[in-house]
Image (tube, rainbow, N blue to C red):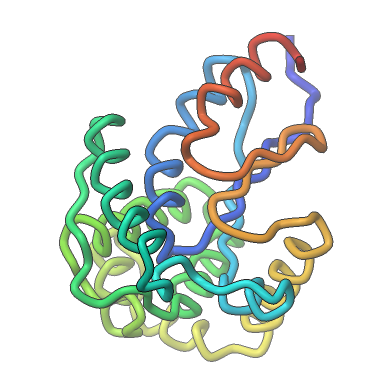
Length: 204
């Protein structure tokens, strides 16, 4: 029987540590319950500006220190490799634009690129804000480098990313990761147990 339910929306920024943790788990979890996931990279800078928020990394108080500690602990708990980036956070418009361009051609390739980009930043400490780094990551996956380089500057792809950010705000997204299942929103990688229970029971 074919599942007619809409895909789960996974909103994230490529510079989000908790988004990275969610990215390593959400697809397999959704598949257990016959669901697909729609990956939707956005720019947290735009979200924060619109909502009047600021990144936790900007906070040098005890809250900021706690969150950096928690990144490590959460990764260990979930069995996910994690190396604190030497540059954090980074602008991620090039990675997000590349994703949407790739997604327009091959969804599986776009998903592979997203995983590779997240791991490049949070495992290999590469500067994913650099167009060259983004192109390197994509080229290793067999992507036509000159074609992607041109796409990163195209008005169409820039408009697509802007539209995705606007859709995120309209959906109530205020941070990363933000997962929405049939209208029910879950914020943060620590909501994975609740997401699993929701998928298993159909709501609670």
